[in-house]
Structure formats: structure tokens, C-alpha cells
Image 1: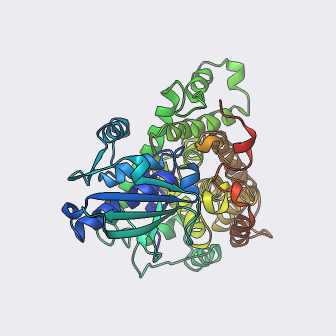
Image 2 (image 1 turned 45 degrees about the vertical axis):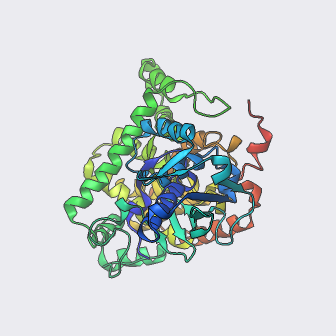
Image 3 (image 1 turned 90 degrees about the vertical axis):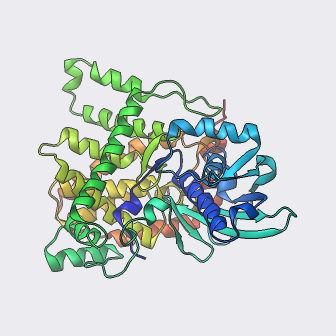
Length: 466
């Protein structure tokens, strides 16, 4: 399977790519399957089972909402976040759901949306969909897996696309004959060395397999503008985040404080860190509130790359749209290597596969736009992951809030430091990116299940919900 930069960066809604975006895509795909096979009119009821991590933290991550929206025909990249609450309220009040917005069936969550603690065999984020006729006879069923970063596969391991991803010539991310294929960091460096091209240039050549240069640039800038708007919304929004903990949104207050600080405070050489913290927290507060964000490469880690990209735009001289495109393409190349060789799923490998991967992607991308060689870019990406190895996924209350919001800020700061460390060297180092990715996957396999997005270990059990 070939992977595009736009498979790594997908516009969607919060709070989770694996628990919200993925299940919404899977639910809509099942409804489309029914329409194409038995016909919607033959369906009298639908039963959905959520397994493993989706069961353990699904309510806190909005999985229940996502399934209802997907069955009703909504897509994460197109739905208006402001319309989610009234849409769900109407379904619950009427105890009825219109499949793909066309055919109404009874839907009472305690009967038709079932949470199973056990896991399906292929991945902790498993779902099973069943359709029954008027006699209660099962007429269709499908299994899907939300494998991280909004990627969904079926029981055969085939990728499931939403309609937006599947549209257009070549169906981005799927096809053969890329001019510069790579699966590992070593492959990527070999391509750069053989051609004299930078990582971003290799990615441009590959992306042109699916789309024109103008369309590539348009889509990259659309990703950037969505990220920037998430920062802006997060800096403006006040109040508390959804959920029983009533976590206070802090980004707006921090934004105001930074804009009104004294001249002496502005001269603080470390004040840049406050701004990077702000950018990351603003995005992840938007994500926690169910707002519009970019999966980068997951929603739980959606603040790291926008924060580092904002740092590039606002603090580094010479920043421009070409640099923004190079940043995203380079980050995408690194993300592709993780996707092909490890995991982006907190339920599978812990938060090292989310914030850790985002930190690695951002570090390599920043090194690239700061003039780093391909070897320095690879070194920066390796440093970014090496010092996130073993990070658990232990969301308090099953919500993408504590420790997730601050963890994104820390990931962004680490990425900047990793890039600067790499740029002070010559690109030669003992631990390669491929070795650290292999180590991350092994560490995730060894990690106890209670530390992998089940909220049964770590902070999730040591912090009492208010």
C-alpha cells in the first residue's frame, strides 16, 4: 500500500482520530455497504458492537456519537461541528436514526450500541456491525478496525476510505509506480543520496503521481489553514471542556497574558516557549471540545505539528508558503515510515505512537525548513522519538484532556529541541530512525494493556474525577 501525505494529515473533528474519526468512517461505510447490497429498505434495525479500547474509553472519546453520525451518512471532514450536538439530540429524542439520511430505523443506544470489554483478534479498536430484517434475521454484518490516525481497515486488512479520500484520480494514497518509493528511513536516505533531492522534493515527486502540482499546493495550504484556524479558535474560546471533570480552557487566558506582557517579559529569551505551549494547547483544547482539527498524525497529538509550524511561521526569518509546504511534506514522509513499520494507535503502542510520532515528524520537518540535510532531518526525527519511548496512554476519565493537552505542548517543545540538536551535528549518529521505530513497536508490544488507552492504569486511576 502506498501512503500519501494526505493520509497522514486529514481534516476532521475531535476528540480522537481512532475513537471518533475512524468509527464514523466505519459506520458510514457499513451503511453504504447496506445500500449497495441488500438495500436500505430491507433493513429493520442495526446493532453495533464496540470492542476493546473503543469500549473502555469510547464514551469519553465520542465513539458513540461518531457511530450515530456515520450511520446517518455524515463524514468527519465535512460535518459542521456546530451541528453535531443537535443532530445527536434529535436521534436520541426520536429513538430513530435515518441510515444515510434516507431510511429510518429504530435506534435505542442501550439496545443497538453495545460495549464489549474483550478485544477482537486483529486490533484493540474493533467494531462489528449487524443489520437485521423485520423478522430479526441477520442480513448483513461487517467487522472494522480503527487502527490509528483515522485509518480504518476491514476484517481482511483492506483499507476503508471515506468518500472524500476515495474521490479524484488515482484515489490518493493508493496505487503503484511511485517514482521514488520508500518504506524505511534507510530507503528514504538512499533516494535522497541517489538523486540529490531533499526529503520534501522526494515527496513532491511521489505526490504528483496522484495529483497536479497546483492541486498538491492547494491541499497542503488547506491543511495549514485548518491548523492555523484551530489555533485561532482555541485562543479565543473560554469556559470548560465537555465531561465530568469540567477542565478549564486555558489557551485564551494565556494568549491574553502573552499579548499584554511587559517589555521586560518580551525580552525573556525563553518566551518563545510560552507561545509554542499556547499554540499546542489551543489546538488540543479545540480537539477536546469536538472542534475542527487536522489529524497529525492522530487527533490526540493534533497540537504538536501545528505548534511547531506556527513557531516556524512566527519566529524564524524567511518563513513563507514554500517552507510551509516543505514542512508538511517532510513531516508526512516521516509519518509514512511510522505508518508502514509501526503504529499510530495509542490503543496498540501507547502515546509514544501518537505524541511521540508527532514529535518525531515535527522535529524532522523543522530541521528541513531550517536548512538541514536529509541526514540531519532523519537524525532530528530519531531524536524526537528516542526520548518519547515508553510513553503510556492513560487519559483520565477516558477523555482527551488530561494529560493529553499539556502532553502536546511538551511534544512540540521537544521537537524544536530535537531539530536544533540535529542541526548542530553532521547527521551521523549511532541510533537510526529505523532502529528507534523498531524499538517503539517492541516497547508497545511489551506495554501492559492498562497503559494503552483503556483508562485502567497510570494517571487514569491515580487522579480522581471531580
